[in-house]
Image (cartoon, rainbow, N blue to C red; front, side, top):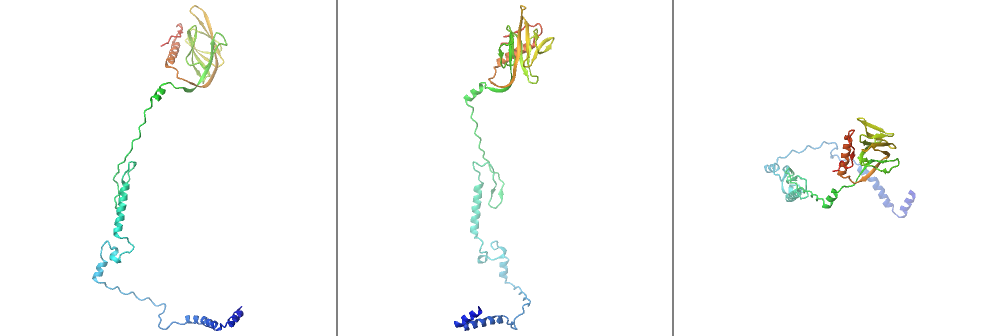
Length: 303
């Protein structure tokens, strides 16, 4: 490859340029390796001592020691001050604008309910309280006459109760009375002989209060007071015969059967207070009766 290069240079008559290039390549390193002159200082020579501080004229010393706030650090005013510092007029205008914005933000509006500390322009916040404006809530409108008229009428109420079905009559398969009410009375020839008091879920029995002087028979348990059967505790499926002797010495018998007792959800209008008061009156008189007292009539407690 070198031989081809030499032949190419020879053919083109460029031998002189090639020789000159070789001469320069050889001479340059020799020039740099030439020793330094004798008068040159050595590299490890110590640095020259600092020059002594010259004494300034009195006027220059006074300028450097001035306490003018426009020239911090003792520097001169004018062209010698910091070229990047904003002009004093621009700084005053910026401070005035910031003070205006702070005072506008500190003003309370009608919808504000909180007090906000304001700035007095010098950077310190003011603790003066700002008045708070609170809007009164709108008062509720009075109920209309239609709603008040509806509220005065008795409303249907729903509750859970024990419904007791009984039969009361001269024979076994008498008419079924479904879901009898509490303090329901049972009469023989217009005389009150028994009343349904309540159903006891814990004992699973229907409780009936009896008038004294009756003869009770049947597969039931009777609670006795003063040698008289005053209460019947009757489970479902049981029956009792109530025997009464009338004023003309006639014997009258009625059969009382407890057929069903179930928990039901009923919805009915409120029972009039007069009916409840009359039934409670009859029950209290029945329980207060003593042996030998006359039986109560249906209208014994009519008000």
